[in-house]
Image 1 (cartoon, rainbow, N blue to C red):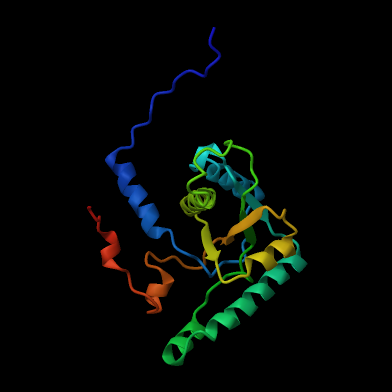
Image 2 (cartoon, rainbow, N blue to C red):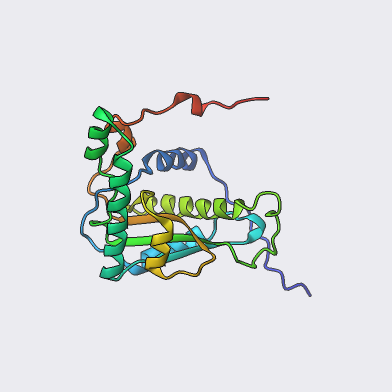
Length: 219
């Protein structure tokens, strides 16, 4: 007698659902301004569980979510960001440098939740399937998990900000993670102070939306 789970009927995603799904994508924004309201631990745990539904190469599931909670480790992250941000400012001149200096590029001090998301490049799960020709797909799998987390968080009223102006090796040392773990994203999570449909960098005139990226190329 088979012990396989009974086959469940596939859900029907109607037009209303699809319109709401597009709204979710449109309103998923990189948040840098958070309220001080605490986020329940259970909610973050539920979101991580949803993120684990993301696709991964060979079903390797290489994502590792690390909650950064102690004040000294958070302060190390902030110092890391400040140093990298100052170095990045030196790459710009004139009006572009002045604009960069005015941008708010992280919510590290305000966000009640910090999550460092790593790729475990030594994972044995999946037995290496699909990685010989493109080993970087392990990293891409973690990006997919982050995106799933981000959308699920937005659907529950949370904002997420992805901090990329950071030294990944220094961060890994600060968090004492295994040497085979590669940082993919550092996330600030909390309830947003304000909500916008358009990206902040568009509102601040840093970079407009590129219409050509909405088009399908055919070869």
